[in-house]
Length: 255
Image (cartoon, rainbow, N blue to C red; front, side, top):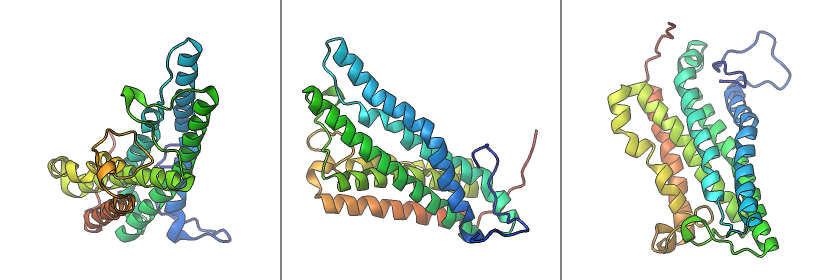
């Protein structure tokens, strides 16, 4: 699906542009679409992150960090966008000559690249919110009285946000792939495996969510938690490949 909402396929123009690589075109379109459309998603998330705190502080209340809530928008946008791309584009892409293996690889690659870009933005917003609270003299406490999310080292914040966002994106791919291959009943029964990771991975890394004492992030060493999160991403990629490699191409129907 491109920025105009059209279904994305693997068709190649008759006149090939210099530097044009058909084996990466879908990955580039997925990444470009996610980044372009994500501008609006991030604008809303950033406005909520800073606007709510500033309004509460202006009217004499106690500002609380809402980043972990506002950032759910970009996460779920990636999930839904990749889900729609797989469901809408698998058939047309294969019909235009792309192999199922190449389709899965390119969609997942585009998902990960988009997650890296989103992770960079998330880490910058994360640091900016922390700076705002320090400048205003506010305690950096999250909603419901949970402890504030660590704001540094910045590189680890960016990595953790990117991994969580990649989990959401690859989960969307896996959910759609299982539904496409095995149908509604199997897809629904598989949701704990295909969609469940979006609930687990944020608790495995230390720089994303404000969590209660005793959660996994408090008991699992950071390197181990990050390794588990990356393993989950790899498993989702592998599940999507397994589901789509033998999927029957379904004809497109119109009403």
